[in-house]
Amino acid sequence: QKEVEQNSGPLSVPEGAIASLNCTYSDRVSQSFFWYRQYSGKSPELIMSIYSNGDKEDGRFTAQLNKASQYVSLLIRDSQPSDSATYLCAVKRLANSGYALNFGKGTSLLVTP
Amino acid sequence: KAGVTQTPRYLIKTRGQQVTLSCSPISGHRSVSWYQQTPGQGLQFLFEYFSETQRNKGNFPGRFSGRQFSNSRSEMNVSTLELGDSALYLCASSPGQGYETQYFGPGTRLLVL
Image (cartoon, rainbow over all chains, first blue to last red; front, side, top):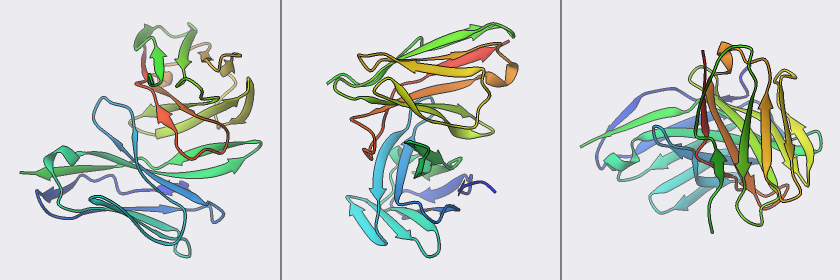
């Protein structure tokens, strides 16, 4: 079973709409969750991190975490064409004597003008 | 502050050869992680180094190895290259172990012919 699952998309939303991106994870002891954005041909950049159940808002972005359901989501309000990218969900796990980020395969978002 | 740098940016090798990739973390960062990104498997964790010690290793064959130097710069080596090693290799740095935010470099795109 893949540890972090995301719909590959593409998810297409019109400009100004809310984009909703979802992610599930399998390791119940995971404590830290991240959303990265990756433009085509570029490296991932961190958008949001969330550690507690509930919502966390940062500008147009809201991350939501439900540890009981092992589910984390990202909402993008007032979507802009510049938001078109692949969004990667990452879950931090402690392994051996270090840490590792497990990434989903990403959801491709297309915001149409 | 300068970001994470990786060299070379592009590389073409043939099967059976070996390759060494280099990563210079953000100044002051002591933790370096390596990831492999392919269209089929997404972003997969290779290993993490902290204070010149490998702290964690992903599920990759022994052909993949790495090291970290006293100045926190890191190298990864892939021996006996296979076609399936063609990928984008990303390095990420963070101030220390356990820090939540990882900053990614631009990556090295490796093509194995």
